[in-house]
Image 1 (tube, rainbow, N blue to C red):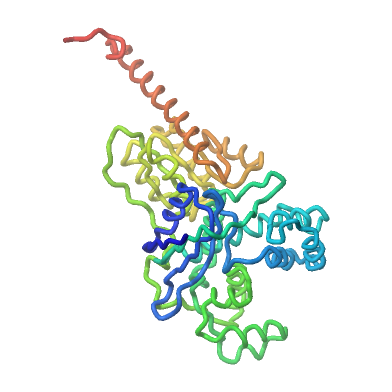
Image 2 (cartoon, helix red, strand yellow):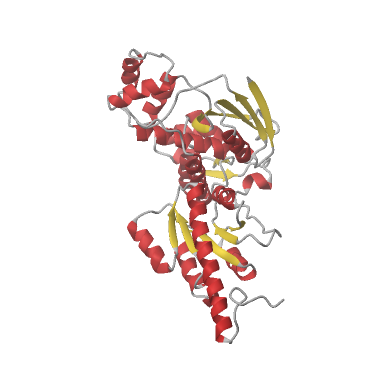
Length: 415
């Protein structure tokens, strides 16, 4: 059975969340409408009981998949191992059985397989989420792919975190490489000065001023981010120039769009999340929105403005921020008397003891390591918001007693 789902630019994540909630199993074809005059960008995801187990440009057989991992891991034994393992399969189509045989003879490790697929899925998401498109869900295709000795699937929230981390790397390449849709162009005559034959051949064969960076990466079966990092170096050496695609709309070229707080019901406590990744912001909002008003800021200036204009009950703070280090911003907030008791939860991928110690010295209340489960985040926020409410209540009662009054919580009714 097959069904189609149309979606607008920026709505892909919501549609995939819905498929997770529906516990879908099967193939999901993604058609992203990138260019009005070109065919849609095609990508695939495979679900099992609502969780993603594979993503890429196309679906593969179990042997094609294993050989692809061998190429990525630079294993000279991969092809031989695949042929050997295929002869021992009880189910010739089984992914799990084939990989178990190959892992058992130590050609691959489960960690290598999972890392490879997780990166591929992250690429699928980042290459399609900015555009409108169509999903075609086919639940007739079932793949028994899973990872590790326990047979787990890919963690959805870890995938979103990886997309966010990759976005930070893309941001660091700008403005030299504006985006993966940008078009590289050889500077006139510069290729003749290149000594390395492979670099010269690449420029002459691939860089024609018409194909985008992602087009070239797809032809080479290479991660566009790795290719972009290479092109940035070549651009700095005046070998090529890189220009943005003119057909892209501002919403497709701007990756960070801060949420603007809007009036909401006052009884829910306000949590301020400071992170320059829209993916992480969306993840945090989804985890907390039922119980809290979630305001978002992408930089320190926005965050300080919101802290001073709204009754923020808790601050979620990323360590890696543009313009100012998260720990330095934490120290700045703590230096303001009214925020000395504000709960500050540092949210970061850095999990070394030394990192946590620096966070504690800077004044953080709690240190939450990425990736995290939504339930864990909600539990931490609940704990510190309740503690802050209790502290505020006790403080009010103390002030009442100091003035010779009884607080309303302890006095008898007046009427």
